[in-house]
Amino acid sequence: MTDIEIPVGKRTRQYRFFEILPGILSYSMILAPFLLALWNPLYAAVFIVLYIIMFFVKTLVMSARTIQGYKTLEVAQKLDWQKRLADLKHPEQALEHLTGKLNKVDLIHKQRLEQYVKTTDHVSPDELYNGVIIAMYNESIDILAPTVESVLASKYDPKHIFLTIAYEERGGEAAQEVVDELFKRYADKFGGFLAVKHPKDLPNEVIGKGGNITYAGRALQRFVEEKGIDTDNVLVTTLDSDNRPHKYYFSYVSYEYLLHPSPRTVAFQPLALFLNNIWDVPAPMRVIATGNSFWNLINSLRPHMLRNFASHSQSLAALIDMDFWSTRTIVEDGHQFWRSYFRFDGDYSVVPIYVPIYQDAVLSETYKKTLKAQFVQIRRWAYGASDVAYVASKLFRSDRTVPLSRGLPKFFRLLESHVSWASSSFIIAFGAFAPLLLNDESNRSIVAHQLPQTIGAVQTFAMIGLVISIFISFKLLPPRPARYKKHRNILMVLQWGLMPITALVYGASAALNSQTRLVFGKYLDSFDVTEKAVVKDDGSVSS
Image (cartoon, rainbow, N blue to C red; front, side, top):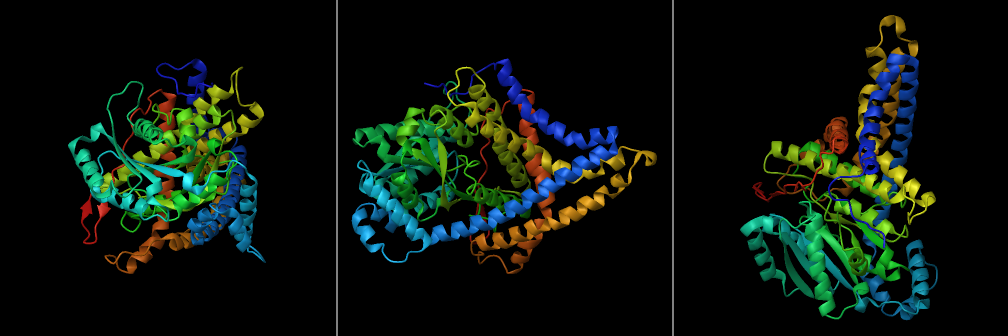
């Protein structure tokens, strides 16, 4: 069996090389225009023009993907997934009603039912259960109760849901009181309700979500086995304390799980949309949250790029096989993709679920704390650059279990995505001025003089993407709370002027911070919990 754990303690030289590589490449890309300008201003100009053109093309493609993703989301939310799941109970009868001229989505449903009927060992929806693990630290009942309520309100039989509250001993008495209150309110509403306290200071664990949900997952395993339920018939979804699943999420993901030919070797990824409190957060956080939501829409249409992120679902049998999630990294969600990929020798993929799990944008008690918390959150996400070394350690070895022809493209996409994350905003913002700043008048070419204007013209065309972003963002917005006047809508448009600043300060700088830590071996070994606050109807803040 392939060892899928992150090394503890001192790394090998090869491992350290690949930990350092993303940071070195990112700094090299940022410095490239300036170093080229010192050598020859023309070379710097060519580099910048080619980079901006590439960025422009990517912007157009991403804009088109955003529109496509939104349309796919719209269609999926309108479908009755509870009815489609029920069709799997009696597929022959359901097929009798799917006759005549069918639209595209019904035709696909019919084809999948026909395939389901041909499968002799298929599982019925009545035999399937959903385990839901909600991870918490010290959040208030105002944060957690709506999450549990959203699970309960799902268009799915709650008696087929095993709800597990995974809480931390570090959370103290306040966390225990919240869990006790949740148990009192909801224990009899579900097929099972578990409250699992994760002990602090367990060996070989970083302080983070991975250890918490893994400890809870093992408790869920014992509960399921005691009930005599086949672990292949339990689908496990992890939620953060502020997550609100779409009403059809559990019906939809159950439908996909039952129809998949190899459900152990896949994960299911919903659309993470950071919209719960979007009207309440400061403007920079709205821009970042909306941008992150768009990115998730785009990636859902790119199977080769889709990874586990935040909330996701996976077979309990598969989780047991790989001992649940990693307890040695603070980015257990994205890392779970790679653990699964190598555990199943490359026979692993992520299936998009085109309905959302709504999440909170970053909001803390004060404006200053909110700004800091946002940086910390993105830095934690960007620490996924640590997976570059992990993937390299599994791929570049003589006893590899994944062929290079399959693994190398994924490795290079992973590396390129983190380097672009850290460097592209700096290159776009400052690269065009390098030939002018680093050369005297006699060494400046006409191209160098015209470069800022040329780049400005290209960026003006790229505003098409911004207009599309504004349009889709308004389509995604939840209703405006009564406590806000109509002029708040105007601010929702003007906020997009902050995008260049947020891209630099929060996107590129946070990624560069994480990669610099990896360069110097200053590992992030503690999960920085994002503070969560709720704005009540009277305008007061609860955290």
